[in-house]
Length: 121
Length: 107
Image 1 (cartoon, helix red, strand yellow):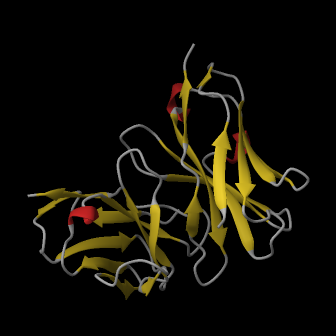
Image 2 (cartoon, rainbow over the protein chains, first blue to last red):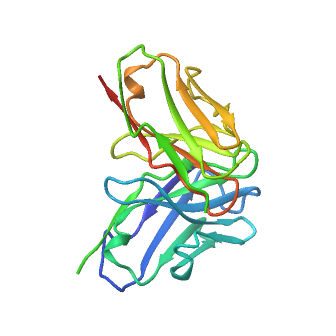
């Protein structure tokens, strides 16, 4: 059974870069037809798609974050990662990694438990 | 970007009730719509894809319908485990966006 687990710092300073990693177990990030993505949720608010990466390496980012986001895969470690730069308090959120299947589902069917990230000095 | 609007924002209901949540898209998304359930402190759970297809393992009391710009999620007979927040999400084009959520509360 595929499982995802986020890891990273819980507290980051404004203007710094957030780095989060999602460890994939019970499956492979190299599996065909899957996307590996990130979704965030500010406290008490709704869900926001950040972006994802296809098994081929193609990336898809939310235009609202594109200038600050990088998602990449490390096949040797079976994990994928998120970097978000120039942080502000508005980036405070629970960050989820998730697997997205292709058509017809094309939805996030497996999620990590989430990791809370606070941006504060 | 395609905007997704859910209604109501909050819904109070009792065990055994039939409830319906509506999700409207700002433009046609065909049937490229998913529904999720989220409980406090937990990750979302995938329920329905392509507007009406039930994900494996999801109870049959959940159903989805609609196409174009208007969609519904129906729970035929509420169970105690169903009280949660529900989100729709389109996948018609990038960026994928979610509705603001509907909180289903116990009356």
